[in-house]
Length: 115
Ligand code: AMP
Ligand code: ZN
Image 1: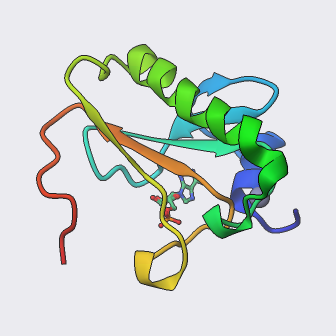
Image 2: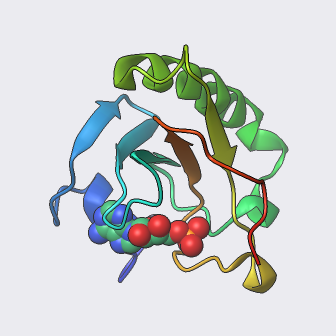
């Protein structure tokens, strides 16, 4: 997808601090971390957000969720705990329209929602 910053990371057109990659997904550090550990987990396929998932993506969605645990272990935050966030649309503040899981941890994260 042209002009999608995460597609450019997938295609190695722009750099990222990659922590995990396989044939379906990639995980890399967020450029503006909101917690001590803040990694984004994305499918390599360009899917704009959660609303665009279809039945054919079931395996991919399961893979993302299972690999999130593995990536948390790689990052050393599985034991202490972490949070996964999937922003979807305007009210969520979604900025990048290539679906992604925010994986946050490494310190106490406070309340679920800050206004
Ligand atoms: P969201 O608001 O859920 O769309 O989150 C998008 C996230 O992508 C933000 O936390 C940004 O800091 C992050 N981000 C944007 N560009 C990059 C980039 N080039 N490398 C890493 N993270 C990025
Ligand atoms: Zn994309």
